Length: 190
Image (tube, one colour):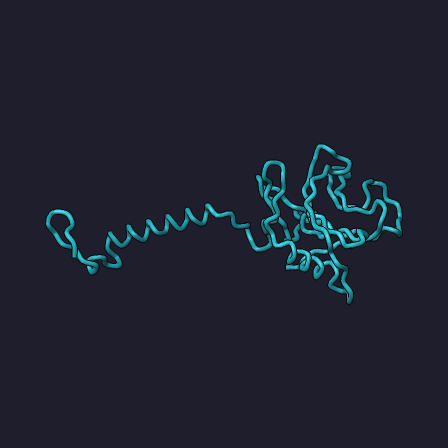
């Protein structure tokens, strides 16, 4: 017991569940919890994950890249018995072909020979770059794992055609059959 106010002593039994002191303490705890939850940078859902942060023009990858490469192999090459060995992973910042004023970020993974290149759009929100795995009409470009298999001039790029953005393995909007450069579009079904 301790002294409170005008000589009146209080004990823990005075804190009744429906009492004003109890409600005050619970409100303070709830406010602290809400502030804590709002201050942490949690993606909107599990289908959006923080991949990298931008720090003074440098990209700092915060995602587990070893696990990411393993996940990408399972997504893109799920039907293949023998999967390629992915070697390099980097974040690129490139202009959109056909609209160079627009820039985009993507993670680019390639195999040891450099003939397989897999790109995944990274959505920029402030200084953070997010992976988006939710496929929807407005997030179609972001949801794809876009793979180009070939050598010369066979690299994932984002094109703008009539104001619409899309992935391509060529840096040209001209559509010509090219058997030396194959494309695989993959996405997760949730």
